[in-house]
Image (cartoon, rainbow, N blue to C red):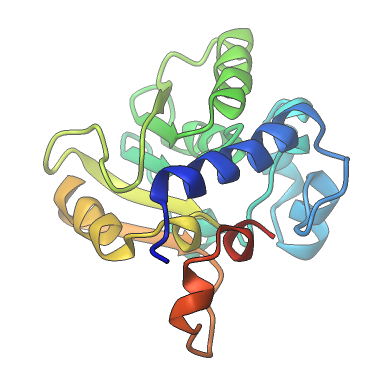
Length: 198
């Protein structure tokens, strides 16, 4: 049985649509401000600058923005941005002369991100629907790519990294936090959608 990529994406979207609507429901992963601040090391200053509803739907696994500096005026791409917590923080770091693009495939997460972007009036912060395997940006257009707990959910990781390489400018940086499996997963298990989403 081969993995049905469309079914996989649909199931992942269902899980994260739930997180957008009901972040405290209880999942197989952590969510929210207390987790981000106390377990992952996000600064209080950063989190205070993000709408509370956006922070509530945070479901990352680390703090990619702590892996290196993000400078005023840079362009940042946030792959799998969800409701946009890392994107909002990056927008604060790059300032109004910079640009941040959040990319996600889940409509409910994007709707939340866009609503709060409008509410906060941050014109240099943009959210788009798209896939990590098909980034809708031109070659060499990004200074920093961040991603938080997302690449592990993509079925074609090689293509994700090719796309990241394509959109990064020469000297650009990749700062990701993700889940790494230290044991090989049997081929039959890789084709089970519930293993990816449980």
